[in-house]
Image (tube, rainbow, N blue to C red; front, side, top):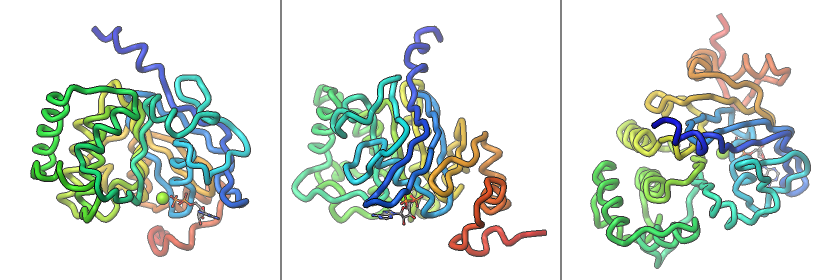
Length: 270
Ligand SMILES: Nc1ncnc2c1ncn2[C@@H]1O[C@H](COP(=O)(O)OP(=O)(O)O)[C@@H](O)[C@H]1O
Ligand SMILES: [Mg+2]
C-alpha cells in the first residue's frame, strides 16, 4: 500500500543559494530551502525578511529578478518557466493581498484555474467538492455565484484560498500570511481547512509572521528567514522557541542585528 506513495513523495521544491533583486535592490541573499511534496512546512520571520519576495519569486512574478542560485521543482529549474507553466506543473500561490476580479464568479474562477493547472473536473464532481468544502468552512453556497474577492471580508478571502486548494489539489501550495487579520474562529476554520487538504499528494509552505496558526496546524518542519536568507530550520520546537524568545536570539546567533521593528517582543531578557 505505502509503496504507491513513494514516487510522489520524492518530488520537492528545492531552492539553492537563491539571490533576488527588486528594482535594483538585493532582497534575497542566498536562500536555501527544501519542501517535499506531502509535507507541511512553515516559513517564519520578522517583517521585511523577504518571505513574500521568496513566494513571488518561486511563482515567477516578473518584478523579481533572480541574480544567483536556482529554484527547482521535481529536479527541473523553474527559472526559465512562465508563471503559467509553473502553475501547470502544480505550483500554487495564495497572495497576502488577493485582488478582486469583478465579473468573474467564484465557480467560474475555479473552472478557469483548474484549466490553467492543466486539469479537468466534471462539473458534477466540481460542484460536489465545492458543496462539501463550503459546508466544512461554514459558508453559504450563495458564495459560489459571488464575484471573486469582490467585497469579500478578510475571513472570506482566506476561506476562498482553502476552497481553491481543495478543488485544485496543487502539488505545492504556498500560503502567504493566510492567518493575517483573522479572528480566532476564522483562524481555526482556516487551519482546519489546511489540515483537511494536507496529504501525500500536496506540499504546503505556510508563510507566517506569527505562530498562531501553527497552534492548530502542526508543521513537519519550520524555517526562519531573516535578512533575505534562511537562518534556522528545525521542528515544531522552533515555533515554541520563537513564541518564548521572539526572533532576536535567533538573529543574534546568525550574526544579525536585533530587529528594531519587532518592538518589545523579545525584551524578556531575564
Ligand atoms: N520595490 C521594492 N524596492 C526595494 N525594496 C523593496 C521593494 N519591495 C519590497 N522591498 C523590500 O524587501 C524586503 C522584503 O520584503 P517582503 O518580501 O515583503 O518581506 P516579508 O514578507 O518577510 O515581510 C523589505 O525590506 C521591503 O522593504
Ligand atoms: Mg510578507
